[in-house]
Length: 310
Ligand SMILES: NC(=O)c1ccc[n+]([C@@H]2O[C@H](COP(=O)([O-])OP(=O)(O)OC[C@H]3O[C@@H](n4cnc5c(N)ncnc54)[C@H](O)[C@@H]3O)[C@@H](O)[C@H]2O)c1
Image 1 (cartoon, rainbow, N blue to C red):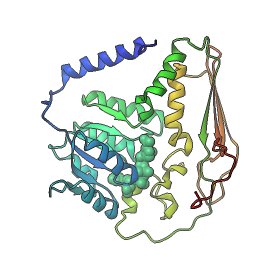
Image 2: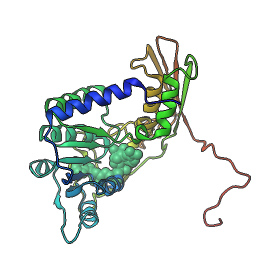
Image 3: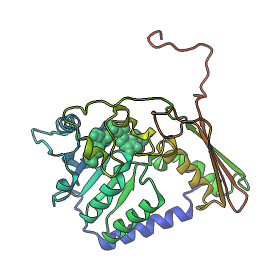
């Protein structure tokens, strides 16, 4: 039998005590009042799950269509959530306990810092930040304002991943030598053309802190993850899940050295993040962590599957 690692229990207990000491205690009858910022595919899915224990009292999106869809989805017993096109206005409300930040990656840091300063607890989608420096600013804002931040690396809450890490960290494999992570390859497509900004989309606000560019549909909804201007390709998209688990298992923070190289070049005028790449970390104790993209789905059958013929 294995139990939770001691470091995990100690850390959780320390945090719980700290929170008990510093925060207003909600009555069990209170349901937290939540605001959803970023109402695309994942935002509306995260918001739906959150309704199991809280109420969505406000939604915000820079795209009218997504905002309207969220208002419709989270209207309950005839009570519609308040709708905002500017998250700063939403954060001024004092009846919001926490936010769910499901904006594209380049917006996570600023919105999370704004929410922390407004005293809101935060559930923020991954990747939590795009740089180490952004991470330091977020940590400072969360600590200074005494709020709780949880990030959407839900594999950490999955007992199978936790058990695997526990076994490694408790020496059940003997001395760890190597961990290999396979990430899906990104999209290697382009060149793309500019287009008129769709009615109802505030493209300037969507870009926010990112470099100002003419509108290209492939830069915007859901595809932002394949551009370095907004994200980091599959290294930050899927890497935020699988690399995170590998770091957890390895249990070491800083590698001695890192070698990273692209395995294909982006198409000129197309997605800017490398689609195929490999990264090798070496740690002081000799452990290697290898990250490699794959275009192979690793699932084989006797027959090829054709949609509609099953
Ligand atoms: N944890 C997971 O497994 C998981 C899965 C999918 C996506 N995600 C994360 O969720 C986030 C959103 O991904 P998606 O696929 O839903 O993207 P999406 O493009 O469908 O949704 C993003 C939404 O945010 C809106 N938006 C952009 N800037 C905004 C701003 N300043 N204020 C308010 N709204 C703004 C967009 O208009 C859009 O509606 C990403 O960070 C992604 O990494 C996490």
